[in-house]
Amino acid sequence: MSTAGREAPAWLLRPEPGLCSCGCVGRRRRGSFLDKTLRGTTVALARVLFDDDEAERDLPLQRVDPAVKIVAAALLLLAAALVHHVVVLVALSLALLGLAAGCGVPAGRLARRVWFTVPAFTAVVVVPATFSFVTPGEVVLPLGTWFGHPVGLTRQGLTAALLLVARVGACLTVALSLTMTTRWDRLLGGARRLGVPRAIVMVASMAFRYLCTLLETVTDLFTARKARTVNPSDATEGRRFVAASAGTVFGASHHLATEVHEAMIARGYTGEPRTLARARVRRVDALWFLGALAAATLALGVDRVVLG
Amino acid sequence: MSSSVEGRRPLLRVAGVSFSYLGRFAALDDVKLSIHEGESVALLGANGCGKSTLLKVLDGLVFPDAGTYRAFGEEITERSLEDDQLNRAFRGRVGFVFQNADAQVFSPTVREEVAFGPLNLGLDRGDAEERVHDVLELLDIAELADRAPYQLSGGQKKRVAIASVLVMNPEVILFDEPTAALDPRSTRWLVELLGELRRAGKTIVIATHDLERLPAMADRSVVIDEAHRVVRDGPTAEVLDDRELLEGANLADQA
Image (cartoon, rainbow over all chains, first blue to last red; front, side, top):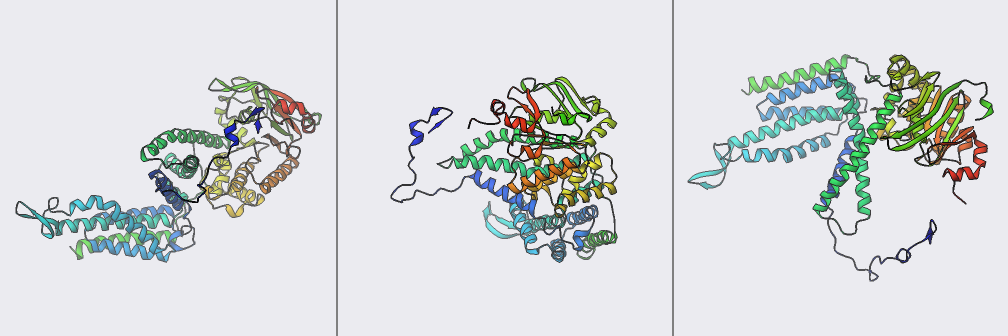
C-alpha cells in the first residue's frame, strides 16, 4: 500500500489483535459521568424540542392567544404563591391537570413531569426544615433526645415542607400546562406582544433554535473520542475533555453566529426583526382570561375566607 | 468570457479585488470578474481557494481590502450600504443561498423563515404571506410551513433556504456549493431548479467543485487556483476539456 508516493509503514499493514480467540470476555465497566450527562441532556433536549404534538393540536387551550395565555398563567402563578393551604394548591393542580388532559395533554405525563421533579429538587431545601432544631414545635416523629429534649420531625416543619412542595408543584403545573399547549415560537411571539423587547425575544428564539445544533457538535465530539477510546476514562479525564472541547464548541458557535448574521443581512435585516404574527384577541382568548381570573380569585377566596 | 454575453448588461463587476482574513490569510488576489444579465456562471476551485469569499464579496457581506466592486452600476462598500435605500435595493436584487443551510434557516418556523426577506425588504404582511404561499407551493414544501427548522432533513432545509431567497425575487442568485451534502434525488431536483431559474432569465452564480453536474448548472466557468487568482474564464465545455488547467487548480487528479 502506498499513498502520495510513500510506502505505508509495516505496522499499518499488520492486523491488530482483536477479541481473544478463546472467546472469553473482559470485565464490564459502567459508562462515565460524561457519557451519562451528555446522553441525558440530549434526550431531555430532544424531548423538549420535538414534543410539539400536543401544542399543535387544534383544541381550545391550544387555540388561545399565547399573550393571553401568558397573562393567565401569571395570574395563576400569583394565586399559587399567595395561597397558604395545601388543599387549595392541590385542588388548583388537579383542576389544571384535568383541563390539560381535556385539551390533549396526557395527564399522566404532565403529572409525572411535575411530581417526579418537585420532590427531587425541593427535598434538598425542605428536609432540614422539618427537623425540630430548624422549625421548633410538636415532635411527631422522634429521632432521639438532645440534652433531655426530644429531637425529630415536627408537625410545623412537616406542614411548612408540604406547603412548599405543593406550591412548587402547583406553579410547575401552571408553567408546564402553558408550555405543553403552546409552541415555543408562538410563546415568544406572545411575550413580544406583551412588551418584551424585540432583541430579547430574537436572542431567545435563536438560542433555542441553535441549542440543538451546538449539542449535536458536542455529541459528535464526544462520540468521535469514544470511538477511539479503549479503556473507559475516569472522571478527571472526562472533566479535562469537557474543558478542552469547550474551546472547540465556542469556535464552532462563533462561526455559526457569524454565518447566521450574514444570512440575515443578506436578506435585508437591519436590526429590526419583523414577523408575520398579528395580534388577534378573540372570544376564546377573553373566555380563557376570565376563567383564569376567576380561578385565581376563587383559590384566594377559599384560602383566605373559607379556610381562614 | 463567453461571446454569448455580448450586448448584455453587466450586473456585477469586480475589479482587482484582493481580500485576506485577519490581514494574514489570503482568500482573493487581484480578482477581476464581470457577471452579465441572464448568465449562469460557475466559480470553480479547490477547497480554500476563495470561492465562498468571492460570493460574499458579490453579496456585500465582506468588503475587499483592495480593488472595487460595483453592482448595478453602484459601487458597493461598507459605507455605501449604510444608505438604507441602496441597501434595500441591493439586497432585494441579489440573493444568497448559503452552503450551510443550518445557518440560513434560523426562524422559528418555515413560514416565518421564508417571510423574513420580504418583510425586511418592506413588503406588507399580506403581500409577504401571498409570496410565501406561492414559493412554498412552487418548491413543493407547503406541508412544511408550520414546522420548526430542527425538524427538517438536510434536503428539506436546503429547499427552505432556496425558498427564502426566491421569495425575494432577486435578479441575481448566488449559490455556495449547492449540491454539497445532498442525496441524489435532492441533487437532481436542485439541478433541475437551476435550469428553470436560468430559463426564467435569472442570473446565477454558483461556487462549486462538482464537475460532474457542472454543464447542467453553468454556461460559463471561472477557475480560481490555490493562489486565490482567477486563472481561466470561459465557456464551461472548454474549461472542462482543459485537463491541465483542472489538475493545476486541484479540481481534477491525474487519473
